[in-house]
Image 1: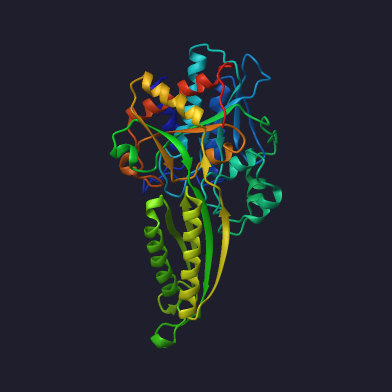
Image 2: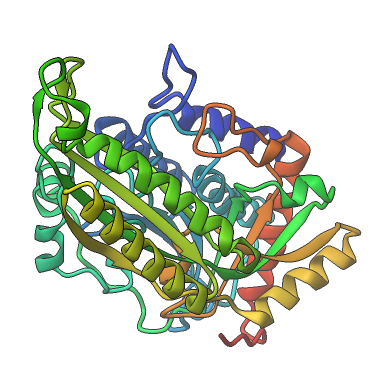
Length: 414
């Protein structure tokens, strides 16, 4: 691999959506910058001689033919969208790593047995539609037109409408092979474990399953100066109490690896001199232990019911998504372990608390993830950072893993 080429390619993508004020990256799904990044990826792939197409949701799939075209493809990729003011490596590192694998094959004039397909998924982040991994869901045939019409962003536009407006009319709605051979995704850890243990590579065993809720609290909007304290139905103070209770519930179950976050809240009328009559919260609950997650969800619902009753607030609690924890391929994990051992690269097995496109691909083929450390475990932030040396090791392990998977003689299973 050529590290200078990888770094140059990363920078070329991150010029799209770079905030001049906060230094974060803004490539929200289906915005102009995100679609430009998809086009840039397609152009890089065409330069390498790949057959490129955009599918019906805007994922970019680029195919390098193998010695045996009828064999199922080996898939490598990640996503190109970001959260608002996001980081420079989340998702993008896996896309550029996949591109570097193809460039390596071309540099070395290697003909693989299996076809190779590298993918830049769209809309992995839940920042726009409150549901994650939409591009990979679509790719795997798990997102219908009817479902796309039910998901809407903060402006009230449905996913279906946005796709119709932004995805090229030349899109080819080709479905992937019924059973790809494998999928591998390189990603930053987005947590502190690898850095704290001074470990080069994380081999992901499981991906925690998110369960997400929308909570709407309905109180009464009234004058902040003329309404006595004991006669208020304040939706915001009710929300504040519920949020601290949710945090306490998360702490109660933290030994199981469970985490819970209230990461977004809307207040109405949101003015200084009016008591908030409505508050909408989004709750993100994650765990690889479904029993703990179910217990925590029940405890959260009970806390909401009790608090709203005490404060005379009406509420509506809606489940937005409920995923199943994902177990990744042990054989591919062992392959990565062997590659690390052969190259004197330190490694450890760990689970991912963050969701990834690999969650969806694992439903249709053996799937694995390779993590590299990130500074202080920070992600979804302008402060997201990795070193050049960490990038080099991660991409090298990805290349060796993908190359081994591309051999006809390499057998893998879920």
